[in-house]
Length: 325
Image (cartoon, rainbow, N blue to C red; front, side, top):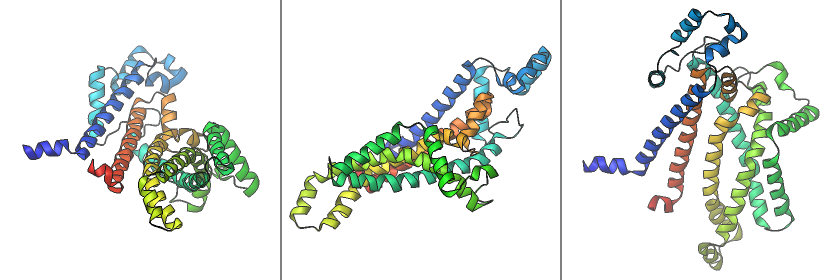
């Protein structure tokens, strides 16, 4: 009993329990919101032709897709299917949602990884540069640039980046149809570069600010003053003492941004015609495809909380103070 109590009260066990409860809450909320919206997936799928269906035909279709059952039965039935790997069927294409998601998810993950790489390559060095001369021209310039990146809407930034790459390098890869990384790696990376730059520039701004703030805060810590007094070389002080500790909050911020990217790449996927899970969700919302929306939202939420859980665990590993607490 004591062992069971210790296991249940362990921080990792508690976080896993929170993840499960969060996913249940997301699934229930998504299910209820879709049912509150006027109309149903039968009307959306058949469009104007739905008006030509007889009441018996509509009733048969509703029975076929289980829409005639009580809401509790529908929810529990769908949840049971999810637990067994059956995410339902898209009524428009008649494809399995599991198959559709398996095709779209790798594209979104690839886009998210590339965007995070761009964001780190821009955000961390610029944050270090801004913190090197606080209040001076380079600091003011980089902070204004980060505010501009945060303020500009994604569609406008996408237009600017796309025009620049097209006019400067002659890249217009979207005109050839999307290719996966396995089909044509070269063309795929060209097609991913533009949305990755757009998303990466947006995410680089909070990473830049976090890096700058963390470096300035750590510089005033007692252990840094002690290290200076002991004559630790400047380069070693900057890299091993200041930057290393400053990267701890940057890691947390990167994990949060990566989680948002997995679900928030919708605009970039739509603009650049990337067949990812965000674009799949948007299309399913317009067609009220209950099974597709419920499943993709649940998958996005699962990836988001998993990334955050892994970030928390990594934070505990790299920061002894968190482990001790």
